[in-house]
View 1 (cartoon, one colour):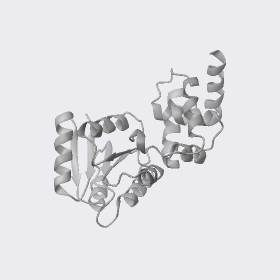
View 2 (tube, rainbow, N blue to C red):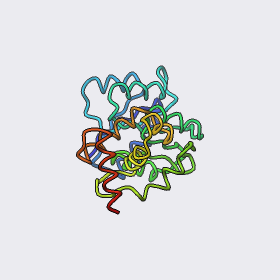
View 3 (cartoon, rainbow, N blue to C red):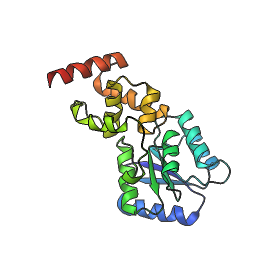
View 4 (tube, rainbow, N blue to C red):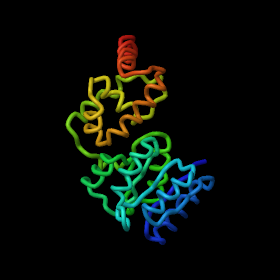
Amino acid sequence: MASLLLVDDHVLVREGLAQTIARACPDWTLIEASDAAQALSILDAGADIDLVMTDLMLPGMNGFSLLATLRERDPSLPVIVVSALGDRATVARALRQGASGFVSKSDSGEQLVRALRAVLDGDIYMPSDKRPQAAGNHGAAASLHSLPDDFGLTQAQQRVLDLLGQGRSNREIAESLGLAEGTVKVHLSRIFKAMKVGSRAQALILLSQRRARK
């Protein structure tokens, strides 16, 4: 069971998304907000939200500003952008500002549900043709198979750990993966917990030991 907050100023869009989610995941709860201010009020009231879905073109505070505000308030709360703007630059900007996923309004309901499940599981979701290209990204992808697979990490966490093992800073990891630094910090916190270590140094030592055994 998951509790989702949907932020979109178009009633028909909200109704359509709500019906899609209800058909695929009837045990999920969906709360609707027509703008950023209402969404923040819902969160301030103490609603137990597992994931936020937001449009970018909102009245008042736009989706990018809402993303920034949510990241400041609770970096661990995942946000998926659901927008009619699906160009590569917009996707990259949304991820840099902390989005955990991006779904185009032209995508299918099946893609939306797949994205929601992936992000709720701790992954980053975006269509493969919209992935931002960044320096060093190919090297990171190529070396994924060298990572230990017994920590129970998600694919997103494995990508972060791989770059950490290359000695990258949080900022460099964020730039390589097209993420916000706050998102990287959240991933690292979960990685350290899974590895039962308390620092980057301890994680690197353990990673080196595991690789040496292979």
